[in-house]
Image (cartoon, rainbow, N blue to C red):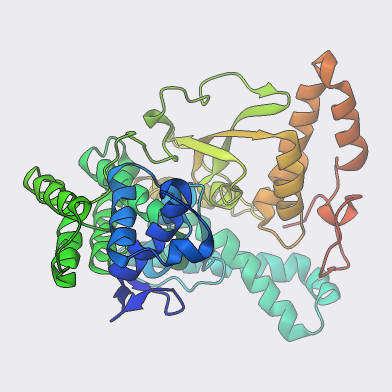
Length: 443
């Protein structure tokens, strides 16, 4: 796994984050909160560098994170396991562009065995064969030429075949989040590595630790030692009493084994794992109202699509019994039994077709505005579109109908959104119409 900084980031020096400039920038934002005297843009920026630097560093020591959230850092990660992507993507202050495994050739590597690759290629061939025999007419009608039809067909075949391969399958992402959030993520990952109390955490731990170490090397994650080096290098002439006090405090912190400048005083945990949340709703009844607490089972691949909606708060539990999904194109065919056999043979690698328990906390407005208008689409992954349109939204409406005070909302959802792709919503304008919307897709 390789982590590098996006070259378009601000405050870079020799391929790393320029700590001095980053902390000064944070100090400028902190000055808006608590600098004495006038706080106009001009007077703030006229403040001495040593004062701004001190204020920037103190944001970490005092848990005053907001000033450091104005500076966003984008990293580019290649060879990252899908599982670690899912852990990162369940946090709520980020943007990411992730290479879809629907477009990625699967090859043998440190994450994926030769046997898994052979299984993937076998099902890629079978799925392609089924799609060509049964649905080629559809692809020819909905694409401009035969070449594009075969390309679209292969994408759907890959989408289904990848369900047989491990959640550890590597991919690549560009991940951006505020600098202060990187400190929180690193702290949570280190906590997970120190206490890997479920199989996924154990699998992810070596890669999570590698990620944190590379982020430290790039000055994305800030260590107390590097900040002391920074203050030494500035060689401040007659530093103020406040700067000296900070310097001495940092030396004491380092003696007390405070390696990282950020300390997780609030004991925040990763969002993904329900067992880390004593207030989780994952074993509670579904509740439908202005807020929604909803539990279901989704395949790993479908959940990875669903969790990208950052207006939804997700948690998961790994079930004790192995369950799996079967693609619609496989159901009812001579290959269904063979699909089951291959899925079960890979149970220990957590194939992406495995079902996991999922808890979602969201609201009526958000499931329409953000989930429906993203996933109720013919171009989306078939499994997540089918679940949203034909399972989730109908269950939400049925749940609202059971409550007298939500009859109006249930009726509105039913009249405007039920059994529709997003292009048929009254308040959505598709920027790229496909010309063939349908609710129950054949594949």
